[in-house]
Amino acid sequence: MTLPAQLGIVVGYLVLALLIGLSAYRLTERTAADFYLASRTLGTVVLLFTTFATLLSAFTFFAGPNIAYHEGPEWILVMGLMDGIIFAILWYAIGYKQWLLGQQYDYVTLGEMLGDRFGSGLLRGIIAAVSLLWLFPYVMLQQVGAGTALETLTDGAIPYWAGAGLITAFMILYVVLAGMRGIAWTDTLQGAFMLVATWIAMLWLLTVVGGPTSATAALETEAAAHVALGSDHYTPQWMLSRALVIGFGVAMFPQVNQRFFAAGSRTVLKRSFALWPILCVLLFVPSFMIGAWAHGLDVTVPADGNVFPIVLTEFTPGWFAALVIAGAMAAMMSSSDSMLLSGSSYFTRDLYRPLAEFSSRDVSDRREDLLARIGVVVFATAAFLVSLVNPATLFELGDAAFSGFAQLALPVLAALYWRRTTRAGIGAGILLSQAFYLLSHFATVVPGTYAGWSAGVVGMALGLAATVAVSLVTTPAAAERRALYFDRNETGAE
Image 1 (cartoon, helix red, strand yellow):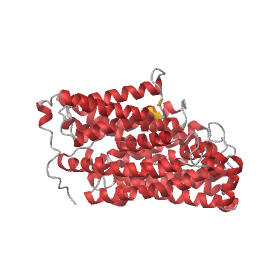
Image 2 (cartoon, helix red, strand yellow):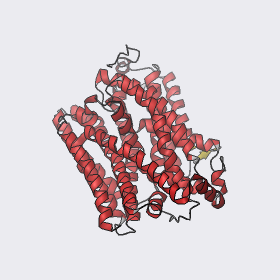
Image 3 (cartoon, one colour):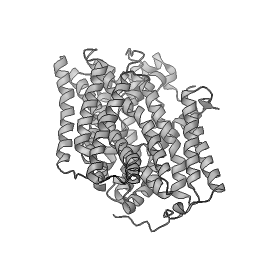
Image 4 (cartoon, helix red, strand yellow):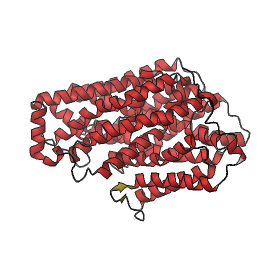
């Protein structure tokens, strides 16, 4: 298939997603609540697939299959099963409580909710700063994935920087125009496409190589350890560490966490979290098995390459490979656009608005809406420029973000369910766990593992311990007492 035809398929799919966003733009109100949360009206299918698509994109198509190619398919147990269940539980434990509070107090961000809970603008700013810190590498992950995917598909005719730049330009235009409503609509299309295309890709591969028995036999011949469950790498501590930091980290991702506020009803939330584990298994089984089987099929993957597009290029027709790569890029856009939207809301709601109110400046909805769109452009452009350096692999970028966000989860759970939690307690828990994880990730003074457990899990435990210990020895201030509303009647709209 010719290069222009491949590019036509990729760009055509991206334009289709953009047109859906433009259709949503006509229904979007010029208010911050509609731009960020689609006026809290998302239904079950849209909420489920927008969460699905915004979370499981570059990792699903590239980082996950790469892991399965190099280390075996057991990662399915981590992402497909354990994480699906862990996040579904947190979806209810954290998401339902957030939804109730959001309905009552019109919260848009996690920082806004906890800042009000503890009467602290500083805490609100800390949560926003931490969230923006870890959001940055995950936006980069999508840009790196898009750049390498187009470079592989076109055999280098389109360089890495051009592919990353293309996805960045589309997502800036898309988010600035569409907001949450448009993002949710296109996410539904892209999530369904991602699921169907991955299954077709797996079945196509198996048809070419003679079925799953032949593919597995070839893998066993090439790398017997990949077939044996429980290799030296996949120790119980390692697998549980990964499952915990990813499951808890997902719940704190701004683009996921904000969707808890956007549900149209409690019934929507309950149906969504019940269906989530099923959706995870349906996606990760074909995605990761393609990567694992590729190891036994004489597929050569460069040290910094991605196995998924290479397999597609080698075992499927050019038009299908281009279509799936187009869907993968659109799915990456569905992650990046949600991240940019959430990052913008954290900046405007939790950093700009408090400062503006303090200085008696205008903080009207229309002004905030304009600043949010400007913030999207700045954040996306900065992430693109840093992604050109390509400082880490896709897995390293994703792992850092998951573990960083996971440090927020247990102090937040304590704040939601333990009335004795104090401002000083949650502040100490967040700052200690973040400092510990940052040192473990960027310095050698803190080890990365402890008896097989990752520093991310150890940091989570330290954060919870600090939250409880400091809360027990401090007294809630008057501003905190007024916000202890978690035992009120929980009767949200249906």
